[in-house]
Length: 234
Image (cartoon, rainbow, N blue to C red; front, side, top):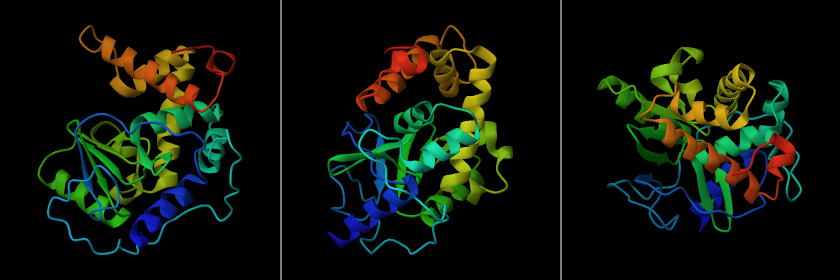
């Protein structure tokens, strides 16, 4: 229970507060590299059940807690910096890296997706070690952090691999990518789709469309009128 509470507290601190609406964890092949027994869906992969490493977390000094139905403050702050609707940024993060903490769902910052397989780590240090290991073996198709920014295509946007897994830096890079896509197309479904697939081709168009609709559903699950806010529905 102590380990579980520590991990939940870490996710809350990084997100700026609790999400107010429960949702399902993403369906897919995910390996959980966390203390055994902490969550319902865990494959220990020989990991020790020791307490999480005490890696310092870089976060904004003030984090007001959101009321029900509000975007966690970190996402609202970064969205405002980039001129984005906060729910658009948070919806992408939920679609990319959401994880269920009891009855709450939050984007999880120490998430990697390696060639389509999800990996979740107990700390920044553990996730960074895994990212470095993958890159050393020649695997660069790795999505990183809450916004799942792909290292192969966007690694140059980070000062270091560590920055790719820093919550605030990851949010800002993801927001910059999303902002550029929306400014180019002026349509949120298209921006969401291209955030996922990069460029549209006949063989990935439907996958991108499914992703975009899923982002909109994640936002709608929070009680948001997506037609009024973004001009789109799922």
